[in-house]
Image (cartoon, rainbow, N blue to C red):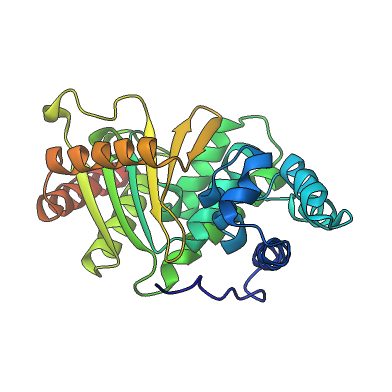
Amino acid sequence: MPGPKKLDPSASPRALLGAELRHRRERAGLSQEELGLPLFVSGSFIGQLESGTRRMQLDQARKLDEVLGSDGFFERNCAALKKSKYPDHFAEAADAEALAKAIREYAPLLIPGLLQTEAYARAVFRAYQPTAPEEEIDDLVAARLERGQLLVHPTTPQLWTVLDEAVLRRSVGGPAVMAEALRHLASLARRHRIIVQVLPFSQGAHAAMDGGLKLMTFPDAPPLAYLDGLGSGQLLDDPAPVARHELTYDLLVASALSPEASLALIESVAEDYAHEAQQF
């Protein structure tokens, strides 16, 4: 049976923290399961901390210092790493997204953040915060576009998204913005960089009517599920709930239009928006 994958502490500060955690755990003669007990977390969660997939929380860092006798090392470094350009409810999911080898996402209302154009993202953030200073909106847009740089790599992560038809029909930012945004989606699909399907209104009730869903898999850590809500989010690593949400996504894929039919619909709606924009 192969041993654990060698960590690369130079990959990120979080990976450095994870490498140190593994070093101190092994020096203490503890398994991941044994270290997880006093933290009330699973052994797999400790493995995710060691691989850098999960973000260490301050209370966990304090307990690790206590158990491992690390003289405040984890608390100090955890506090330094806690700053994020993303909202608290999404920061850990964004960290995991950057490490995922595959992402599957259901979007009920908006084009997913990884796939948004600048104008579309700006319209979304302005709708969220109608009285915010322009500089604040600029920072939010920049952070979202930076996330999209994950797709610069030709194959990783593999991205498969199911869009509710409402995503196409809601005119975010106006017809010109929507035409550009949908053409961007179509371009990524035609270049075989993403797989996209549309869940049509005609399908009626479906398995994910409660909200958005993101599933992430990793080379050396268990899969995660992220549930998206209004100003909130929940990152799950327990195998049973993750498996249930994987089934939910499979049901959505089965109910959606084929990738070919979805691309045709996206391009058709984009043309409608472009024609509408020319009327103004």
